[in-house]
Amino acid sequence: MKNANLSLFLFSILLFFSLSSCQYLEYVGMNKDDYVQTYRAFLEEVQNDYQNYDATQWQAADDKMQQFTHTLHKRFEKDLNFSEQLEISKFPIMYHLSKYKQLVDVRVKRVYEQEGQMLVRHLTEIMDSTYTIYDGFDSNLREMLFRLKCEHEKKGKRR
Image 1 (cartoon, rainbow, N blue to C red):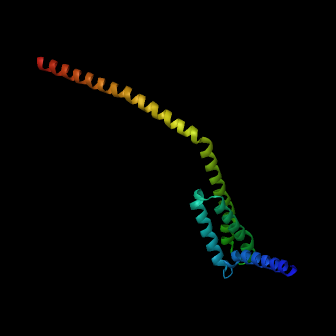
Image 2 (tube, rainbow, N blue to C red):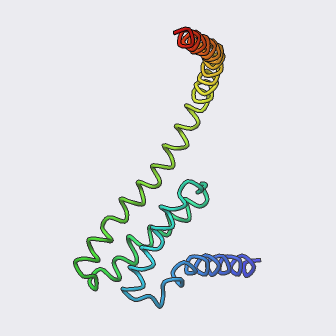
Image 3 (cartoon, one colour):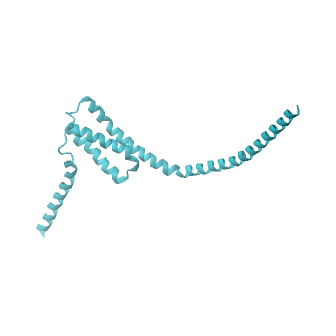
């Protein structure tokens, strides 16, 4: 029984390290240029698709961001030139702004969706009611102009 527990314990540890190293293996052969390019591509992907991210995708993105800002940055920071350092220094800010933007979009939509729908309904009602007013006004105006034209033509023929 003791051997079974020990085997299970060792298997659990082995499984844990295997799974946690998978993320590390993704970046094993990476050099400084690969790091900058991959980090840039990741950030562009987040900025282009952030509206569609769910909680699971944000968690995966957070994990990846952690890799870029900590593990990989420590590995390559001495190799980065000044321009690359400047570029990379703004990436965490841009990432968190995208995340915040999605949060705000979701909350605004949730809070103001009913008010927006009600506003659209009221504006539609106003437009419909003013259309009927102007429609009648327009036809009356055309009739008046036609009568004035006819009267003017009659007066012109009399002279």
